[in-house]
Amino acid sequence: MGPAARHGGSKLAGLRLLALALAALLAGPALAEKPGGALARAEAAWGRRGEGQSGDGRARRAPIARAIRAYEAAVAEDPDALEPRWKLVGRNWG
Image (tube, rainbow, N blue to C red; front, side, top):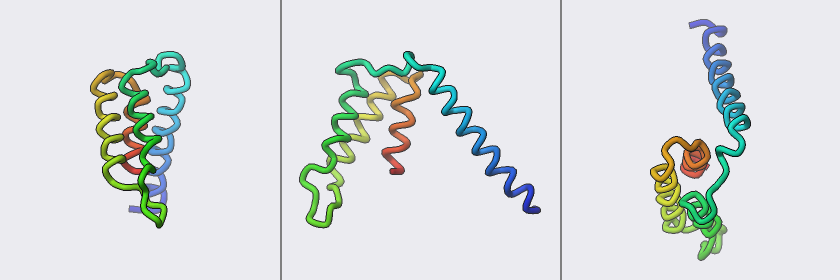
């Protein structure tokens, strides 16, 4: 496989990411968070992930696991919504 083929794959991935970002932007109000919904609870749990952190600044695993479960519940609550999905992916890899 030549260099052009290798770089073509990364260009395709970049275009997919751009298309996803554009779709999120155009969806606008459709992505609005429901007050008190599962996504709001997940965001609150993610915000608390640093509570009880160790002296070296690392968060404990349990609060992060609770937040991940809350994001999974948000995806289950609204399977067609993009925001809980991309946040779940970001929280898992972030």
